[in-house]
Length: 161
Image (cartoon, rainbow, N blue to C red; front, top):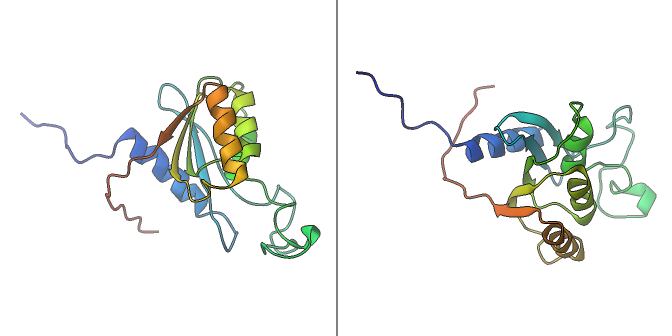
């Protein structure tokens, strides 16, 4: 009798892998972030990465982090979580889960809460000490959104693109 293979990836590895692959689409030279929204039944609903809105040329806007507000990226780029939420065209995101490569900022936390996402699975939390992330965690906890640190298996996955 044949048995199924045992080295397949877990749901968490699969969805965080999709988020990491999505991050590779970002044109940002400093920070590439990806997100993947999943239903309660483990179906991918939407994906996103940080970048400019549709119709705004990646070549005409600044990508720097320094300088005057109109001369850096922050007024122009959309974060991966918000992009994933806005990319969804199927109706409600109630009770879904979002996998994200970087812990959401306060603005993305508001969008996550408002659209009904009930769990955030994050990989990196490198900005944990910033006011934005502290406020984000406060709001997510108040709203009853589960916060889950992604536990990497250490497995290496290679794509031959």
